[in-house]
Image 1: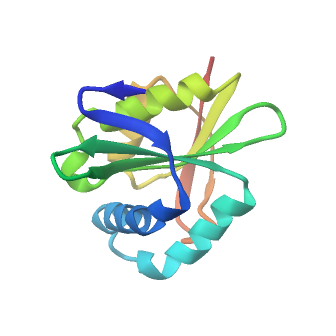
Image 2 (image 1 turned 90 degrees about the vertical axis):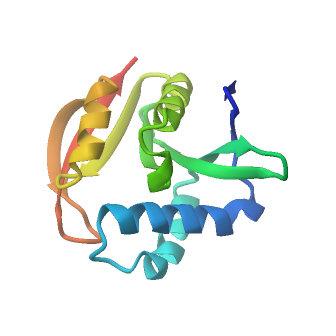
Length: 155
């Protein structure tokens, strides 16, 4: 899938360093209270254990393709998908790349797309609600102990 100069593709093992940089930078800008560099190895292993699919959005330039977004989707037993992560560097937020990644996630979903968002992350909550997700519960982030909201989008 490609729109303007943005291409979506499956991530490969060689993408891990760039994904780490993107994920850590996005979270550091969103909530700087934690050491995301230290959290990365556990996060990466968690996605592998879930057998999640990781996709990247990249922008082609004259020299190479720069990764400007990531999407992590994990399957569930009920044919639903969990949006484990959608992350963009701060410079790309508001560019339309997150919307492109969300359209891709919705296309991959057979029935329900679920996600959990930190309750403090107002920008993400506004984005998910604009993308037609409906709040269906709340909980606590096991990594941080912070409150969360659960959302669903149904096909």
